[in-house]
Length: 297
Image 1 (cartoon, rainbow, N blue to C red):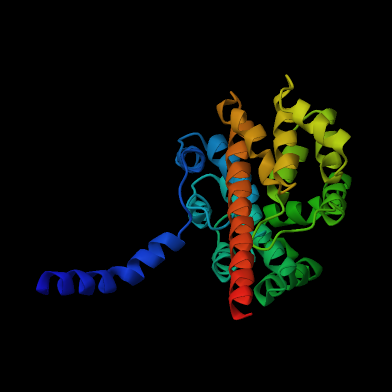
Image 2 (image 1 turned 60 degrees about the vertical axis):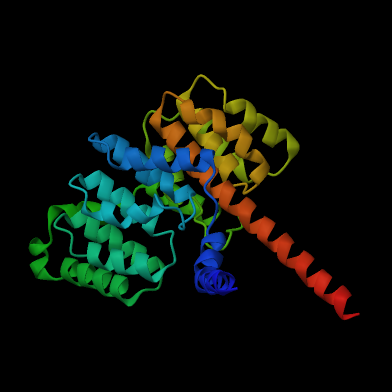
């Protein structure tokens, strides 16, 4: 009948759109809440809250909607927020992130441009090397008085023991990075440089790479600690274990009264959710391959 043919044509016309919609990751209530929590923090009037959200995003998957706002945070009016955005973008090995960092080289505040140059240099991007060479040449010439005080201070800061310790810690962090996900270095650095972070929190970060059951139990217990910095460090370390089964342990922290804790929990849950979906997809593909092989036999 004519109406059946029309229906068939409509189904064929919409088939590609339907297939594309199914390919998108399903939004669950918990991931939707996490994205909203991070988005609201990025738009908060308090610059410290925006900075905490930017730092927390170093734990999330680049494909998340909230992560897409990170490049825009390079235009934030607060310098500390822009510096945090540079640090988090430095972990994303994408053409878009590189382009954003190159634009940050032109920031009006020298610290931001210098941070972007170091990030690009670490990515082996020629723009970063050229900028660092320009800084070095000017400092070694008699016209070094033209270099801004901020750049002088940034260069001197590289010689301080604390920064050297952070660099060594980053190099020896011991995590095996998951393709497409950051290593949470911005989140870790923010905790280690915060004067309010306790020694126990530092221990939680250092022990995070230990996969023993005893350490896992200790980190889970730390989620209930009275010290916010210990809770934040425990969330960070558990998220970087990339074990989707730990998502339920992080969910209660979405209601934590401290922004550094709940924002890391939100980013961590989005990370683990992305990993769970990837693992599910791989299992589905393997099953499909097996069925095809059995059919061929």
